Image: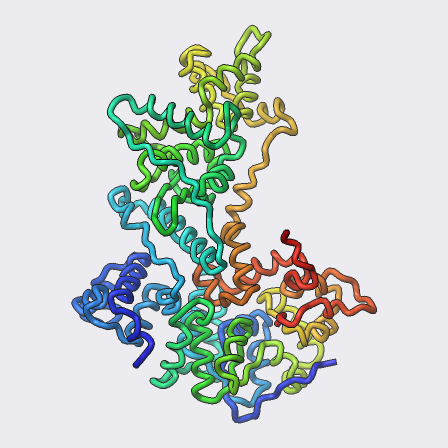
Length: 393
Length: 219
């Protein structure tokens, strides 16, 4: 008996279906390219007919995968793409590719964690489903409660990415994505909550997108979401997420207090105030001005006035902030072939002989030399950590 | 001095894995190195497909392999029924005891045909030692260090080829060859070779041999 025959045919079929869908190939095309009748492929995917090894080889080659990737015990078989189907226009290649990016990164990370025996913190706040009535009121209240739970008090959220990753347990990826995509949110039992942010956007904009997606996680986590720059926010879910992001990053009382301190003694509200307040809360200049307008701390239309009178430039911001200007490390990390965390996990799995070069390349979508560069770049100790004592307490 | 090396019998087939094809291409002397061996040299079709994937990542290794096949230096082969059973046992199962398809196909073919598996993968060679102790394996550096390649290429060309494989292919060097490789390319150029252990790259030559600090699990 062949080893393949010891695996339930329904499991092989299911994994082949996911590999095909992940490759974006429909059954008719796959069957034709593999020289199978469509009905045969359907039967294989439904587990009604056992796939033979040569057929498996042909199919995985077609799907740009491998038998090991499909049938390795620890491999994570999740396809997020179908869950986005009602949000995705098939012609929107940027959105499709963003969903594929987050799906592949999360799957690779979870498999590496499982192989290395890493248990990720799952410290999720309870979901707060939308109730009848004004969603903005609900969002303000939910944001305040979560801030308290996270020990933020009335202070600014200095690094929302680390906060969401370390304190909440959400996987956050910052990668360069084309088009108007600002953020993607998905939740899956195996992967946990995942957020993708566009590295092409400025840090403050990404912070806003992260808080927006966090809002979706709080109220509607079973629904996947794509945030686009030109989006019209008509639904209750979207209005909740916007209000949640504002209240989470710029809580009303904190903004009022900070506004009072920053503008004390000033006769006019100026660019300098905006730059300092935006920096303090880590949000864009537009976001802070609109929040001040909303809280009736400044006149409505103030942002428009600045816009038509020369705007507020980055040069002016640097002039006011000097050394306080923040370096955007997210962009640098996004320019690596994978994330720094994935690199560390991959390097550890390779050093410990748990995964081969071929397995890691396939898992991370890298070629051999890219993978060797990553592993080599993390060798700052010598030959691995050889010679060093175990310094873990 | 070259460490004692293994030389395959002239009639034994050499089965090359992706990792080796990539290193040889990076060396710029792939054809010359392979021509130095009188042995038949093969690549399994699964490995050929895998190398083709690199094209999407802007690597040119597939074109180099095609040229070697066209020149008759390498023949593409496939797994027969019996070899497929070995292959199957190497790709299906837990991560720890399996390999990706290309690495598994190279080993399955070599085990089945009694040929030499030329493979640079540490996990694969560890698996081979426990599961197929009779199988003979070689690394890319074994090839460079062999008498036939050293005499065929000559000192200057060999030095350049090894340096290029290190820089452009990030070739892994087995521990036993570290001193030989650094002596060959020179300490100054070794600094540029990031696949060499940093304790060797970044340490000036001294009386103390830094290789002693490496443990036995190194390649």
